[in-house]
Image 1 (cartoon, helix red, strand yellow):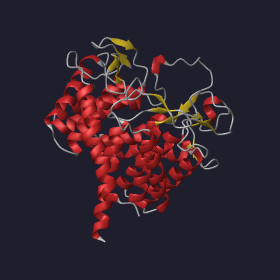
Image 2 (cartoon, rainbow, N blue to C red):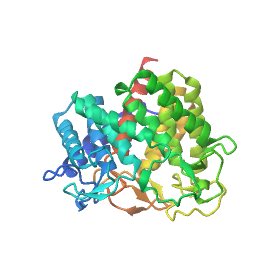
Image 3 (cartoon, rainbow, N blue to C red):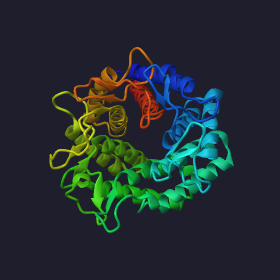
Image 4 (tube, one colour):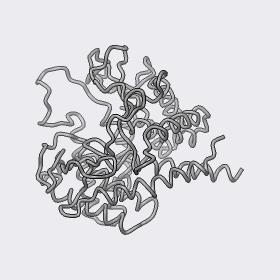
Length: 394
């Protein structure tokens, strides 16, 4: 049996003593506001562009630490200054959130990416909870309305697809909405929240999960059928596994243990399918027919895939008691801590080759920011602590 008390202490210490101080001290732009995310192994800034979805993620992270751990003034100040930078520069005045800004806040990339919007929603929602600021709550609600309005065409007028060409819908948006809806549930009317949750659960579990494959696909034809194309064959095991802990949370929220159990089933199948039997770790991309993937990075091992799997598996054990979930948690824990954790400098590596060697020593960039590592450490620490308390009561 795992030593939950010892594990909880390890995750807590890594979060509060190493990872959070790294971002607090290294990422804040004290001159122009917002955050630097392009940080090398030691935390030095190597590029000053600011990516709006990562700005939102960092606001959410520090606001969430205030909401779930301790209301520390330096954490709150960090979240507020980032939110104020976003409020002033992150959108076009109509809450269409840009993808990238320069250091001073001038837009570099148009508001095509719906995930800039979704992370603005959870950022301002979490900060509204931490501060009681009504303006932040209004920004979260209004942006969420825009996200829902754009579900059928997330890129809007910035869509590059040729008119009348192959039309596919993506798993990423309904998957993330499963999490967003719960993040801002206190800002939404109960009937609207319930309807949104039901729609998201249906999309994830009845549309993108394919029982004939036993797996979740990343893209489907708009009529819900499989597409035999690069995008249509694409599998992302980490994405599917991450979605399952969102679904478990929703199952608990709805009082539906059947949904929790089904999500655990799918997560276990995805982990088994995605695990590299030769070198260990979970593949980034796969092709459901075994064809060569178009992504040249398909066999890399990425930080977020493994951290999200840690969350999913310990949550699966916490909510179902299934030993297979605990065994997978332990397997991925051993891999993640021995490959991604940096013993010499705070924060974790993000990108490994198939054999597990570090490809890029950066700690943050255009795609990696203050999110998956601290969120994963927080989630695992608090669940492990609860499991330790449960063990102590026996």
